[in-house]
Length: 272
Ligand SMILES: Nc1nc2ncc(COP(=O)(O)O)nc2c(=O)[nH]1
Image 1 (cartoon, rainbow, N blue to C red):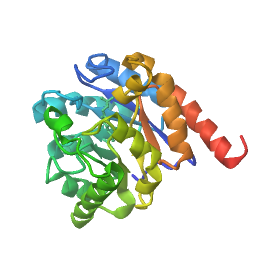
Image 2 (spheres, rainbow, N blue to C red; image 1 turned 135 degrees about the horizontal axis):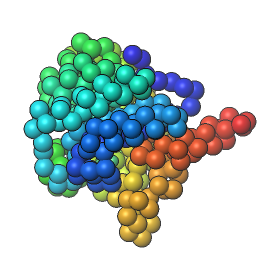
Image 3 (cartoon, rainbow, N blue to C red; image 1 turned 180 degrees about the horizontal axis):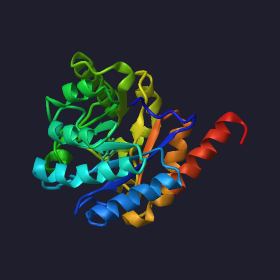
């Protein structure tokens, strides 16, 4: 499968099959709930659904690979059977293999290949698109790793190295998507600088995915708003990311962001 390119910014809906994700932990741990939610987002207009089985929120404990695979593979299989394009959100090669076997058509690796040296070759063998997110370490250590000279230049340079590794393993350049990894070893100011200078990431020549949905830096901006109160800010980021040329946005509320990226596209084109 090649990357979805619908002629507008792609909207990727999130299904976290986890008990403890920061903004929707536990709501979709059950397979029927997860499948129902994924199908509903696809029917609302999401271009693809990102299915994850391990929470990556700061401080989260890791789950065993077998547990993670058991969470995502059945959900992916049912979504694909329902005609829904699926990406798997994992940093483990064995989970990616199980997800690909279940019908996933994109691998979304928050570690950018750092967590599992086998991942790039698994993706290369499958010949599927590969999201390389900027990451510096597991949730337990992330806050200590948020140290940069110039966060945009450093993220850009570190992602470039991740791309080189992926290409050397046989991943095709046209299959690479980059992601600044908002909130992963970044403080709020780092996140805003990465968004402000998104063009410098785009200059690397790869599609860029932006994942700001409901994240803490939005809540902080809004005076401590909880995740449920960050949807309008998320949609604003989606509009601005689309306007700035992002390939896609990864969101929980697909309806709002579909509207947001439609507005951005019309504004950019000067027509509706
Ligand atoms: N590519 C990509 N994947 C991700 N997976 C999980 C989370 C954490 O957010 P969640 O707990 O709401 O899924 N954020 C990202 C992200 O920003 N980019």
